[in-house]
Length: 244
Image (cartoon, rainbow, N blue to C red; front, top):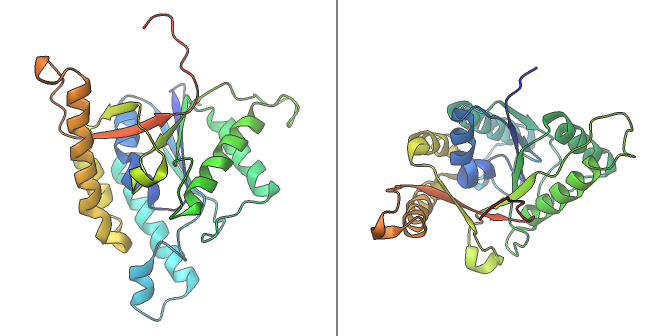
């Protein structure tokens, strides 16, 4: 069994982790973490318009295509593992058994930190539902009375990655992660997502803009790090520190 630190991404649809935290996945893998990605759905109904427009597709064919894209992206990023729960999308719904399945994954991974969506998303309620599930399952995984005898979860930070229209989502980043050294990996992973090619350059611009924010908040012209690309996150739980 690996003694590496671990991280867990909970992605509503198969492509979400690529746009929003692929840099974090690649960077932490390079730092010796084992990063596990869980896709709650394939995004087969609502996130695959390009495939449906081609005509002649079945739901299972679209799922298979989106799975191949996500697996290819995860491989480019060097992710330790990617899992697909196939809970369906639009709407995304997990019953109690599916939630307990996610709890089992969380306990097995024992993540140092977790990543998921913004708390609010009026354009895509699957996203905010995924984060509510992530918080609920984090809570259950901490409960000593849930499957007594198993190793319970500690208190991993939950970072919310950047939504598509931040000003509409009440998402406020308080962490910027420099992903300059792994940008080419993220860009290659983005290009694996051929079902949503219209988003490629949007998220390239987001990474460049967040690189600017990283530079400014790390010291700017007075000595800030020359980051070219970054990802923004909103931490949910308090940080515990010994000094500031």
